[in-house]
Image (cartoon, rainbow, N blue to C red):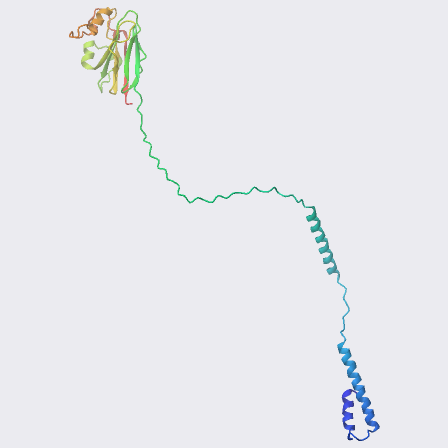
Length: 268
């Protein structure tokens, strides 16, 4: 019989008033109530008691993981302990200079004038010997000049310069075959330099200003008296007209002995 059944029977059996004596059956029910109270107390006590479940032993993989973690921690600690603790030398303090805000002055450079200096004109010294010219180049530039020095010990020599007209294509041999009068008539006379034996020309130099083809030749006769030739080209009386040196007595003219050359004057 459970507790509910006992209570139901007790309710049906309590038909007496409060002052009436209780029959034995009631006491029997009283005992039943106490028995119910006792059971209820026992259940209450059982509910208050905390049941602690038994501890489960860790499984194998948890044990292995814990062991690996311990080994790892020990290894890291050992590595940190064995690491060199060198301290880098103190770095010198770097002074940071703040940028200046002052305006940088602008320097204006004046353009340099590029003046092309023309080539310096040359003065060429020509030597006269029996019977040729030495030191006369085949090409000169406009503005160059010629001087004469006579290296002969006995002969009077001169250097006469003629300009060959443009378009005249006669060879040097053809021009050398001309007479003094033909040379003066057909060519353009530039000037002459005259020098006694062993001396430089007394009448300076000849400057070549125009480009073109030129002849240089000696027009003094072989064996002519130097004193006579000197009076012809440089008379003592300034009023006396110059006499051509080829009119002095003597043999062949110098250019007829091969004392003739050709050269060109070009732009500088």
